[in-house]
Length: 458
Image (cartoon, rainbow, N blue to C red):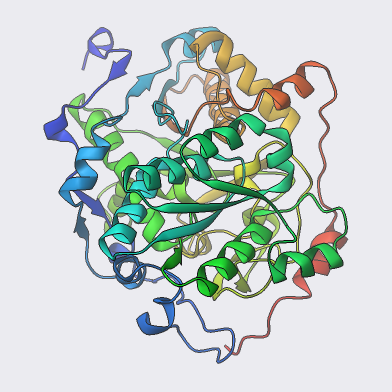
């Protein structure tokens, strides 16, 4: 198709929006390893998971064979408030870089939560309401997930209890206030309000917290309060399922103009955005219908893919959650207080970990000063202030485009712009003032945490 016929923004119609989520696991020959009961070491049953998660979400979590799962009409109608999201051709960035590469980004920041997280939040709140629950508990890192869930719970008149990683609670007070505006209670984690929080504080005095800490507290509260369940914003199979709307819309938009990407890039913390973006493309790759180079980008301060171990581990620091086989830095690993709060998780989705282990995904890690350099470069030419998490993907997209400039190759690059950074201005201030530093864990730091991995029989 002629270059000048491709618009800056490719929008889908409401009729072209996905009517079903795509279950990537259905096309995986090597299925992700099952969640294990930490007490027995045996795969968890639906009955064992139901006190933690909503019943319908348990079914989705365990379903490895159904290719497409229908999106309920109530959720599709909610999606229409901010979806379909645009696929944007970064013409200005291409011109600034002087690259022959064609760069596209899927922008998920056009809702109040400022990120892609609302795609799964509204689904999980819907199933909680349908089950007749009183409320839900959760954790949040940078605050996008907590904001999204507070919005979804407000829509369905559900109580919402959020444990926010302490460093983000302090760095991002405005994100906290958005959650409270939507009716959520927000507690900095680790806290003195739970038994596991008290234990973590005793073992790590003055800790800035982590997603693993916050998960432990949220699960404790959910399991000790009748009428509540725990919901998670990343990592789990059900979350990657809901986020597949990102990739499905992206592929439909590209197909409309006969565009086939060569490289697909996403930031990676727990895996929700990356898993959602790559889902239909990975499906084609698994089925042998097409090939793509897929790159996961993680912070050098929390490099679970690139420096982690593929093993069973607890998903939480308090070691009260099920065991998941994943690339992990160890559940006791607490990353430095970097500004990419949503990527500060010690492990990676079991689904993505299996795909990475099997060689379908590449991974790289980048330092936060380099990330913010790319973020400002992007903001100045594309007019969107990106979230720190998204900026990891921007960093590598720019690097790949500059490689094309050197070689003269006209590759097509697609990356996920997961959200906006307007609540992350403390981080931008640190960068602009020259006060931002790069903290990278030593091999000894990681080895000490890995040494504490649970012993699981093969």
